[in-house]
Image (cartoon, rainbow over all chains, first blue to last red; front, side, top):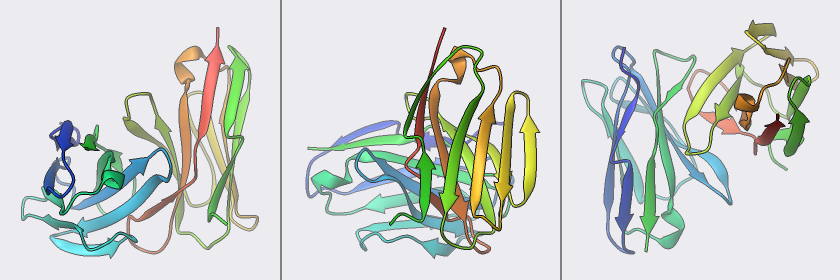
Length: 111
Length: 109
């Protein structure tokens, strides 16, 4: 079975731009969660989608949004990028509420 | 105060040593996860626990729900075990994880 894939792997943007990151879960997995990892704050939960519905949301501003499609693929969008949004963005998939399988991450640099 | 505390933050061991990493949490949980992150970012899920003890190869994870404490043990450590080990808790019926700050383990040959 193919693992969780994330595209792109690396991204460089400038302040004020917007960005869309993509996550393809393991086949059959209905839950996709997104996390942000920075040296200062560590790993933080962004949101979780389950069967196309947002099931939970972390403490991030409204500039961070996401969605899930009927094939369980998920996208997250960050609008009006700030320098502090530079981070590794990880997604993880799971069948329901159990072991999460992480993708390799997208490293976003905001200049 | 963080809801999840790990200790130690850094750990250096000699190959073959027995290693213990501790995790304490302050809220009710539905499960606790131990994760491994190698340089470059990839995260692997090692264990998910809601009670008792689990073993996989040289790795053992235990949890004491009453004391709100979990430990990850590595027996006969090897340089390839060098990584960051992260404890994370899950509450309720979603997959939202709250993470500890991680333990950076270096195993020297």
